[in-house]
Length: 298
Image: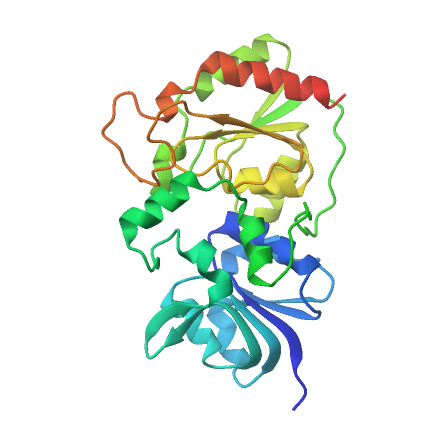
């Protein structure tokens, strides 16, 4: 039976799915990608890419792949590998019911829940890390990351207007990512004569992508919006507190505003510190760098 070239299993979160598209620069085509149905629009319109919703993954049973890349350390993702045939594997898989990962993936997974060294050491590695997610991904496949862009099936729109998109939301599981002074920030920008778009929930992800594409600069936390804006080649200003700023590659157009607190990059989903990391990000700093991003884009 002939084999397909590459299987990628990356179910979520949506921002992680989008930044994983950089792998498409270096894997053999055609590529079959399994992801959750909500993320399917992020992977549409890409040449030689077959997108399979996780909910329909049973249809892959029995297929053969030269390379299988599983980038989720969850049983539901790893079980897909047990229904197909592959010549080479990278990332996570099941071994006698236990999730394991190969040596090439160890530098990445050793900073997470599957770390061979325990949670305390994994947390310390995560905090000290200065490498981007893409750097780890490419290393897993024996390649070197050299700034390869996201691959996105939606063409960037050039916007000359002084229009700034502001993402005030965060995933309900990650409310600590949300900066609390967006209303004052938006008010300041509008007083400067800047057109501000505050992003809202859209029923169709493609409509949301169009909203981001209509902006010249995007201000956000470490969110899906940040990844969509980077994929659309926008100037981005992003605030970081509980998650890793170095892990996000800046592509020369992302300005990172990082909390000055010592316990940054804790990956906690709730915190009793007053003020917390996001409270300590100054309004004036975010305002200044946003205006600079608008000026740089001219």
